[in-house]
Amino acid sequence: MSEPEGVPSSEPTDPTTEQPGDATAEAQGPVPVLAVVGRPNVGKSTLVNRIIGRREAVVEDVPGVTRDRVSYDAHWNGRAFTVVDTGGWDPDARGLAESIRAQAEIAVNLADAVLFVVDATVGITDHDEAVVKILRASGKPVVLAANKVDDQRTEAEAFGLWNLGLGEPWPVSALHGRGSGDMLDAVLAALPEPPAESFEEVRGPHRIAIVGKPNVGKSSLLNRLAGEERVVVDNVAGTTVDPVDELIELGGKTWRFIDTAGIRKRVKEASGHEYYASLRTSTAIDRAEVAVLVVDGGQPLSEQDVRILQTVREAGRALVIAFNKWDLVDEERRYYLDREIERELVQVQWAPRINITARTGWHVDRLVPALERAIEGWETRITTGALNGFLGRLVAEHPHPVRSGKQPKILFGTQASTAPPTFVLFTSGKLDAGYERFIERRLREEFGFVGTPIVLQQRPREKRKR
Image: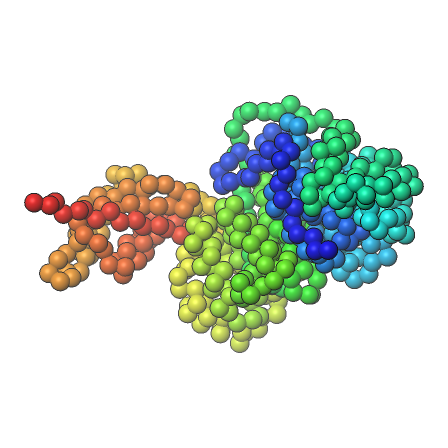
């Protein structure tokens, strides 16, 4: 039976989605953490979607879709907690699966309580018993979820899970929501009480999305910044599926880095979990402030790299370009790369560029100064007086070309907003696209705006009707 993504139930959940500029949960103090573990394909990600009340975790009826430990904010009965989804736990795993298992073990060690998910229709397996031994050794409170109990008949099979010795199994259907309320009540009883809620509006860490094609080193960069194996890294393209958030202390500040799935050439042609992974990556860009585009310096810039740049620009996010694997770039490749940058990246010449090697950490320390410059440009505001003084000088020195006997003029300008900088120009007629680009270029020369797109909006004056 195919297992689609969980859909929000009618039970009283109140999930919040973090948006750019909002105060984040960490401003209110740490909340309890619940790790969701179990064998591959027992429905952990579907149950996570059910708990948080929205479709976030990528789900497909194939073992091994989830690979990293991914955190989500959840609410139940007025209490907030963090849910950590993990990959399938196979105690005898080797290779990539062994790295997935290691991430699940880390999640258990860092959690306040564990939700152990078992497929009630299969019953107890040797792998389940091996995981139970590890959970007992951790000393963490464990709530046993008997998943895939979709009807009254299957509920009797769930009671056989008493033999695991973890206490009462809670029959639940992650797919339909059956029994999820009782299970969540048991989860809250196992979690410690959260700290008193603070209503002071405090800005959270800057959000940085790490984007790029598959297998360019995005996860290696996050691990290098975190100083630990935070996400699974493998030479197989497409290892990362779910966006992975990590709070990292760099340069005296706390940053929230979001490792994303590689954006493939044609999202519409992707199927299954690859399609949903691409959608999650687009969402991660939307909720970030800066996107770090990781490019394999040893490979020619591709159409897909340019398409990702366009996605970031259209989202209005600041941009930093990191050319990774620089230790593999020789003199000949550098020559051709310079030509490719002039040709392919002409639309984003304002984006800071750094050369790094994530595997060894070479020049990774240059990332934070580039991010700070990009954020500063993204949030730059010009006073109306300074802007109109600049526009007056610009029009006097370089007036708009005459078109069909008419010459549009800029009457007045104002900066409507920041993040990204957005300007509204009141004109006597529509300006040419080339003159718009000229204005943008001169704005950057005069005021900076490093690392950020600039949005120009025109308000042509309407002719009066007689």
